Length: 269
Image 1: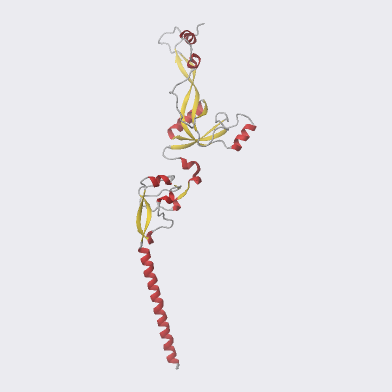
Image 2: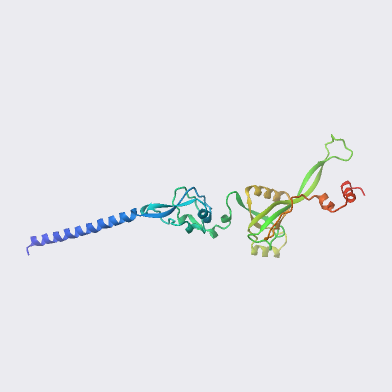
């Protein structure tokens, strides 16, 4: 075999190899293209979903829908079934039309107090003594009322004074239940309670309550301007008495006959 014939043979072999590689490459590209264009089912948001939305509300509501998309358009972690996020909570805003991915969700337990808040609900930390906060009795998930005793001034005319008299300011005290049926998000920790009991009854502890933004204003005012305490509500069939205000007259006069009641009011013996 001459040198020229050998070179021709080598060139022919390389050409065949190149043709085979090209054929394999073209086939792979075609397969990838076919697979990429294949439709797969994903879940997309119908409307904007705000961070903190529990997954079960998405599943039970109308915020999610399934959509067929080419496989190449599916983002990593895309959800194929809404049930995949039923026990999770959204950690970021998901916008309308956006694919829902597991990367935007976390377990409810990781959210702590936030998992129990939505809409106009707020977490409000209430500091107080062990007696005010029912330390040792109160626990997470309980329901409580807030009862307060508030001092105020009422202008009264002095006996025998003319109607035009400016009168005098008389300091009064009244008590009533100012807030009802509040959820306890977090009660006093056992270690804090043990420390408080070992020192004094005045040790400051705290509980966290779930309140509306409007209730938060009233609760803050009561904390700053009155004496107050929490009271535990029953678990089974809780009921509320009619609203009332207790003053010195109502407390001392409760159950008195008219003569004794007149004596209380007038101060006569």
